[in-house]
Length: 405
Image 1 (spheres, rainbow, N blue to C red):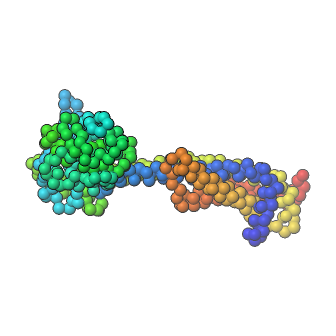
Image 2 (cartoon, rainbow, N blue to C red):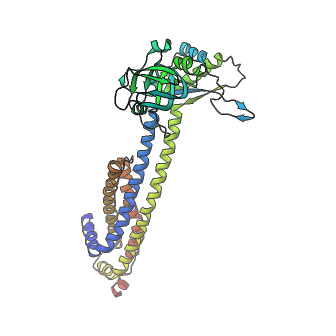
Image 3 (spheres, rainbow, N blue to C red):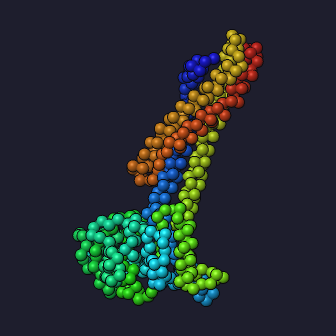
């Protein structure tokens, strides 16, 4: 029997039992759309996390001080204060494969200016910091190497601070106080939004790290040193080079452990991506269960159809139909139902994703491979759950079938 004839027979049978077919079809539609929606949400979340992690800087090494103990309690990484100006200077002088280097001096302070005051994060950084962390200047400019060397009292404001203190005007040229120390605003930054960990990246004021030490903290220690490489492939060699420079600066012998730690931003992004990918797979697998339920519904419907059409099967065999023709007929009906349900489910799933993106604001990405997998899986469900009823129909004794009913 040719494929066109099989298709015609399948459509004719579906029309005769359209209500039952519609209910069975609904299970496939729900299953396919669930797979597409759940997988798209997972992929959208993964893409959003990677983008936010990328905004923290690519090809980046972060050097932090070691830990110290107080009363038998380990205070954690960064508590020892083992990084200072000398380490920064040696890194700037001796590193050959680094692209950018910036120390970080961090403190919280009351910022006064404009229409009031605001308690926020103040970070002392180098002039190369915008290139490392991908910050874009909105108005004015970021301070340069000259201001850093001169410990100049200049500041660059994040978007949140601008909105809180200067909602009605451009703050460039205005004076603010950080604690009791006056600073001049030389620039503002474009909004970055929340970080991958949920913090507000725009709630910050940047000042030269030398000015932060001399005018705000009065200490030589730095909270961390950021070192970026021109390419991700250079990070392992750069990490070894950074470790060697700091160990020499700290005069550590070969047997001594590092009194600092180095984090690889690329490795962190890789771990986050793998975790998000596993979550996407989990969501898709949970949604695929509804497709299996729909497949069981198809098997149930086809078994009922075999029982109801036993006499029809006997007549077809009596006029020359072979068992494989009967098998192909019932199997084609099952596949047509699943493929139709898959197409409708794909359309409905894409509509739901569009609603989530445009109206609800949830990050969701529909990829071509997701559609292909969902449609292929739905067709496979039709084949798998249609084989048993089709074989039952093909094995009917024609004489017994003609006596039926």
